[in-house]
Amino acid sequence: MIRKEEIDKIIEGYDTSKIKIATICSHSALQLFYGARQEGFETIGICEKKRKETYEAFPLGKPDKFIMVDNFKDILDEKYTELLRKQNAIMIPHGSFVEYVGPENLENKFLVPIFGNRKTLEWEGSREKQKEWLGKAGLVLPKEFKNSSGINKKVFIKLSGAKGGKGFFTVSSKEELRKKLAERVNNGTIKKEDSNNITIQEFVSGVRYYIHYFYSPLYKNGTLAGEGRVELLSMDKRIEPIDESYRGLPEIPQEFFDYTVTGNQPIVIRESLLPELIKFGINVINTSIKLFPPGIIGPFCLETIYHPARGFITFEISARIVAGTNLYPQGSQYSCYIFNEPMSTGRRIAREIKQGIIRGELRKIIF
Ligand code: AMP
Image (cartoon, rainbow, N blue to C red):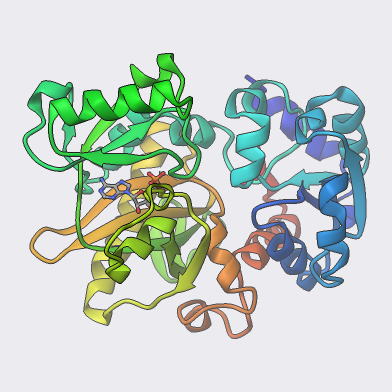
């Protein structure tokens, strides 16, 4: 585990007038570079050859400097981490960063200051830990079945290696589960060992809301949480191929039974439901501070299903910037009530870093 003191020492050696914001060119990088630029930072993009054109195509969303790698994982090489430190870089973790580099490597090998608490990634990466965190925060979670013999209604099968819902499916009985798992192992969709490592969750029907929060330990006006404040910056609804099944097609092709996120839609929520969401944000922050001090710093997303009789059921937390925030590079229907200027989550991160520099409090937000 990279120790906080090591990072503090690196930051002490940084020229704070030349701090650069760096991330991997994927996921929410356009938004992050654009937001950092709005706050006056220079930016560095770690990029694979095949992706460079994409970023060149968006001059305001491309990084000032590219570091080209054959594979994102190469970023763990000392050659690159040293280069980033020399550039006074602060790395912003996002979903693809965590996926390509791996949470363990990030915690143990990647010796570059990152925005937010490194320990958060460990709590995000384990379903058990997520359950403990969200449960202690008082959120309602989907019921889980310890083994298949208890299945007595439609359940959702989550595979441990699955990224973004790929390969998830539903069944209504133990026999159906056995059959569907065997089919998938036979046709190579899932590995034999993964078929023993599944989560069986009740299938929750309802309306999905993905709520984007930000915890700032530096700002103390507004609604207090932890030693700072909670901000509800925006929300979205994900688009997944399975959504097409509701179009009433008589026969849904098998490949549409897929929960992979392919896009996002903007959304606002009935105003009388907002108090509950603010409360969730406060509780998740305060609980994180108890479980892994100083808790979750910066952006996170609660992934919920609103059931008309049961209220919000939270099935997951993303403990970093989520791609759904890409909808709002110019701010959202909620951020405009907090900031008198366009404020995306990407810009918000850069603003927090800027404030950390101005107030001499970078240590509170960089790990
Ligand atoms: P996840 O990888 O946990 O974000 O799940 C991917 C997608 O699966 C979500 O966006 C939902 O559409 C769906 N999903 C996850 N858990 C449940 C559940 N317990 N009940 C119904 N749908 C779910």
